[in-house]
Image 1 (cartoon, helix red, strand yellow):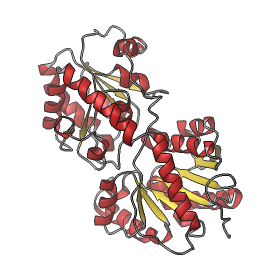
Image 2 (image 1 turned 90 degrees about the vertical axis):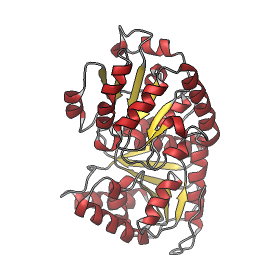
Image 3 (image 1 turned 135 degrees about the horizontal axis):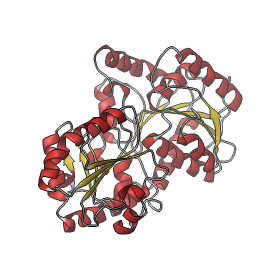
Image 4 (image 1 turned 180 degrees about the vertical axis):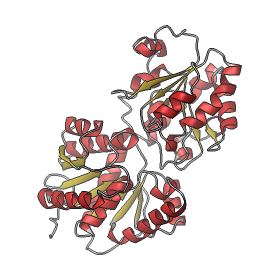
Length: 390
């Protein structure tokens, strides 16, 4: 199939192939799709229908096609690849944008360079596993670079991780952005009053919120191990885990009564506004979206020092806001120091808000991705450009 050639805009078709369909990846794709639709691009989002992404993308004006795919590779992979091939034949995109490991696997095997291809890992697959599985994932990423016109990393740290791992590809760094109007500061008391789960909670009770899929990557189990020493110092403190996922049962079984579970929510913004402090103790990331949403909401954050965390923070905030990954003791110390210090939290939240407005606005992200599309679409094939940052 010979792809059509257009500059991004009217007449240009972008096919986003996406798995997973919730969490930060879904938020990034939804915002990007909306911005591209507004720019006149024909946007097609192919994803599983059993998650919030399909509805959200359709609501932003994208065409949504069903792609029946699981998160992990398995016996259905050949069928998932065939589905992508049929989608490409039907949609006839000018560019394929594959998001996360599974889409990157199936998408690149389906088109093998026949369509200009952008791959966005949203954190490297080989960091999520160990042993032989990690070795196979890394071997695949090195091999698949030949079918990748551009790898888009969400942080310089994610790019450096890929380079150190021996992935030789044309790079762009496009940092994650969020909708600073949707995630805007508001009164914490009013936000708490709007959330039934917090009914009866004392207005003076310190509230920590963690937003993310309940899974090993996001590290909620590390936060639970840190929670006991926190509540010894601050007995009234409450922790809310917002989200669902494969570790939900295990986490509920390990949690004391001071930990509340919100489950899956349609809108995370009220939870950020209700919080005194937002914590994300991830084991690995590319650049997490939840801390950006929290800072846009004017809330202080505590993060594990994984890829993208330092780049997402305002200059000078790391001593208060970063802790070593997989370290419950350091996490407990950081949270226990910030929770009672309202002036410091407010100052950090204000600085975070300004930082997001200047560096992580979703419109900046969309503009940078448009520049990548223009470059990739204009490049004579099979030319490969040198790594760039935006």
